Length: 398
Image 1: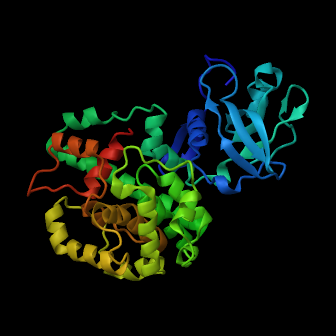
Image 2: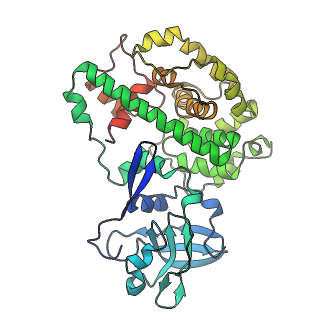
Image 3: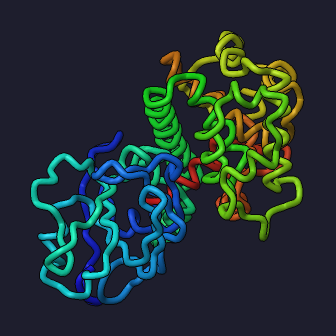
């Protein structure tokens, strides 16, 4: 940004439900937290980039990040980093004439580097290396926008939409949350299709499985591990957990994490799962014929679970797909955030009803509290389900 009163740039993108808007602050947050594949970065000159420090986020005058440490082909360079949507924004924002930007060592942009004809300059002398994040992002940009933790960290308001729900009649409230949940389902299937298209079926499953094993604190380092070690490499008996852990050293979070979710334990759990069921991505494809399809939702969760034998399906998945290596709420999260959206994307089937009535997995306590206040869930009558949680999550973003 060029001065402290600048409004962050906002760009429009086309999403599943039409245009959506992204603030440059989101790109800054992605850079700050390293929410992308840092293992294979290359600048526009073809040099390997390693991020020793992304810099100190500067919300005042001058470059977006101060005092960064970047290695270019192993050579350590100290300086600042500027973030934009496109290379052309450098000139458009007047940075080439502003001495505050003379110490910029890397220009990070979202869009591909299609046009480098006007090199960005600092101090009238040095060509600034450029890095496009697009091809290194873990997800489509729309998914970053939909991510709860990203929204929280960028200061987006999440309570909008809840007041309207409390003002509704009970049946209207249920219908609204059902509609929100359906939107959430479509988004998850959409993002799964993008991941499959980018990585292929097996790798998409591998990335998704590890990412979910890292919920919620360690998704990013788990994706780092997935990008560096394929599912086939997990079968190597000489591959030690410490080596996997070191693939994302410095990014793991343990503060506030329950012992059962400690990174090494989760990595070991996934490694045991892969060794027991090395072809688990193909196994979930084979199991797809067991799953009831349908998009109509009666909201009678107890009735649906009895009619569709959801408890038996859950036991079947636990034993045949994950060899009982993953259980409880983590297994339910794998099914709801991983297996069902991936299968729907790959096979073009609609598992919305099953997804809605499935058990809630690692549900945020705040969402459970809201559902109780809304009188959506009631003991022994209307149990908590994944769909209600997803409906609340979606409503909090509107």
